[in-house]
Image (cartoon, rainbow, N blue to C red):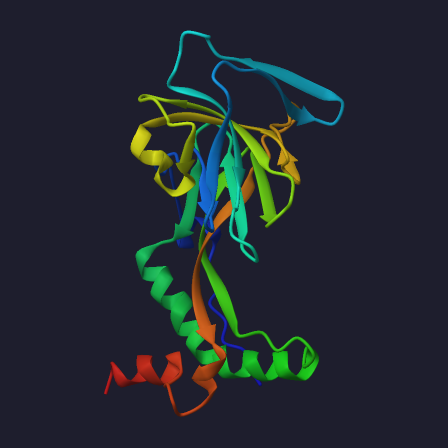
Length: 227
């Protein structure tokens, strides 16, 4: 099988912009429980190095919070990006559709290769990356019910109740979030280089059901547009 090829330089195919900065992303059902009203905590930066984060005792609009799931069998995932500007790299509008055309041409072949080489995995979907958000720092945590909670230091424009649903944190005017403890992956800015980490992906997904007549594959849907 001859794989389709598009010869492009990166500058022709990719745009770079600064997206709106989000302070924290939480996936799953979770509660935030206040640890204390005024905070002086140590935050991991690099192995063997810590930094102090201090908030005024007079500031009631923030504090240290534990984030945990309270439903048996559930999980919660937490992403805290660095405070510096983020960078969004994505395919230009024209190249985005070229990329989908290429994916349409190889979609069925890719599924055959997966079934051949990774028959024991049987993934429900595969995807192609069309964009990514980059940060020089990030902290990630994934917790199951009963696990030790992750802790964050939060600064908001309005007072947060002692216990609050994590999904509505943004409604309190979240200004700043710093990962404190309980995060499995912590990467801080390296003073010796400007390395960036991919923290959010934009994708186009192909599900396994597309291999059958129940749903047309992307290639058939694209070709039908030109008939």
